[in-house]
Image (cartoon, rainbow, N blue to C red):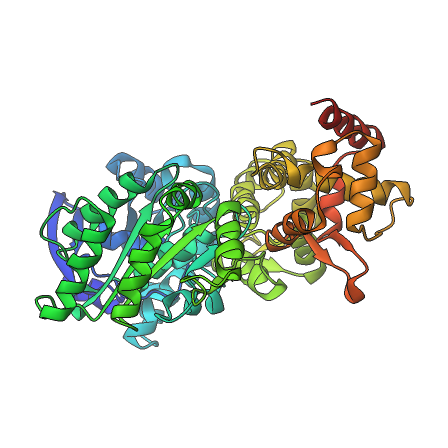
Length: 532
């Protein structure tokens, strides 16, 4: 079994145990060293996930019908969260494969199971060993049920698609320190992928990821020390940020540790930056001092939302010790990145794109937000089950699965999907406790409505005039520099952009205007803010 798996591209095998042995069936539990190679395909359960969770392997002897294969797998009760390779010591016909595809996709117990028969095994010998894992999935997945899209949980490295420029900037030890953008744009995924790519202690490279949402300076210091101790960098707990700075500098100056590069990646940093400001930003000064002490060997990242933007603008804009720290704005995907995120997994699963206009429509509906593209893709994969059950697919010609207007119409009717789009936009507007972003967005929508739903730029004076008319004084009474700062933040969050020639500001996408409601909704909300 070991050389067989190695021939399919699975190396670093730590242990293989026979978990069940019968006359015509042998089951194996495979464990790997937790050092996965890079996989080209986007399916973590048969990639990096197998190296952390293990892999089930089943060897079946003799001929079997598609139904008997499914029945046998169901009786084995293999763990669905793990990938299962089902080796069949016989040959399937094309009609058998298509029948197997229907059964696999309509039976909930068949998740994450790939069937490899003699025909497929023989065909894979035409490829170099390094290519076989990718080819196996491309050929077997259309007849299986595997869900690669992640709409809620952590994005695995295989599904990190796009963002190559941003990823390179974060990995650059002299690159940006502050990373910000709206929600569901992939900031956390960027940091976690950086950790996955950089953290190789055996090579002297360390990357520590910390989610510090709603934590103050003392809590973040404690978490930082704990992670540094787990990584074997520190051997003691420190009590202050200054002590942390001295301890890390000592490691380099005394050469006690084999550390070439060290990164600390702080996610959800907004609350921490507010607390740091109350300490005259001493924690950040300490981290910057370490960075300056060993240039090219130490880096820290703060990722977040509006407080990260404000720190960046206020501190870096002044003549302070932070003037050398750069920033990175994470924006929605461009067309090519969004297209790849949606279509790369679908192509492995046997979807056939006959009309590229359908893809353009889907991406426009998602506003090119990675999180929404993942959600849409997940629903597309799940919809195959209903298509089979409603007899819209036939065993004689599927796979492939043509992605046509019927998929588009069904998903656009999904109220949950429509609500998710609206919710993601609104939570970005409501980042600030004073709802400044939401009020300004209402004024932009008001101007569109007033001009017969045309895209009309708004100026600072327009915003103040409309707010004054509805008695929203906290905006109407703002000075130019205060209001401009809010507009700049909304531009960084990809809500607005400035028209050429500096004529004013408009929504980044017309869809944002549509989400603000009709004339009555806009007026009602403005009055509510005026009465607040």
